[in-house]
Length: 335
Image 1 (spheres, rainbow, N blue to C red):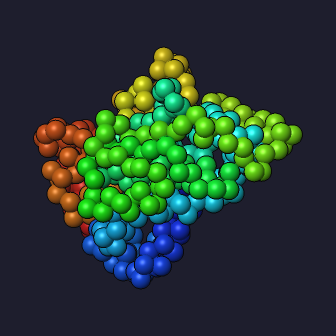
Image 2: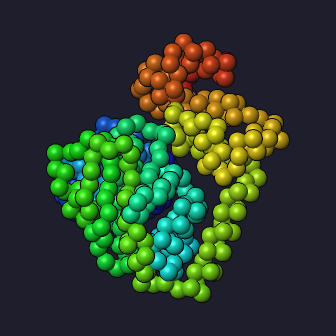
């Protein structure tokens, strides 16, 4: 899972932000959880690793609002064609429709469901993957990015509406309200933006009807390109690797690829494989990586890969590799 912005663009902004708070990137990557990341290029981190870095940054700075602040660092132009399409919209309602339809072209982002309410709409975040803290980080980052993009589009601060968050309030709840400029309600049923009708009608300062047609057509082409995935097996592998061990169900993967579950199953049969086989393949890749590059115990690795019993993981690993996890670890250390 990622935010509205590529994690490759997000991490440099994170490092610049914590530098403003007096923390260096060396301090961040010297944390025990990130010691294996030190020698790597910042652009090489995948979405799961980026989430871990975000968690550690919040711990380092001890700032519960860090993700909200980071969300307000987004530059619409870094979103490419999609960003220019947003800037060419007539009003925020049109921009919101664009966001819902074309969010997939900027990478895997939380699902966004729209619900009509008496005085406007709610834009609700749907997250099925990740730990509670990861869900919180992505929620705050995404809602902050969306609200900041809206303000940038109309070139003014939005003070109407509400932010609802489905978890308990931090000690300094007022800091959240100051950053969002609207009331923030915690312990709610859902995490969502409540957007009044009056906000949706606000004109976008860079509206360009002629340009909008061009950019929207380009977005449509990009979306059609995503839907014409020639190798669904490879696409699913990428989704599962980004998810770590908490794999989505096949219907969720189908939704991410913008096809029906039945179509996805048929395409996988055409590629002489199935969803379970791909899940096992990715679990094996992750298991081998954990065994060779970390000091996690076999039971911890089994848990990370969503096995309820360590013995089931050992049996599966033996079937995949012809050796036990412990033997594989010893062999990798010798190599």
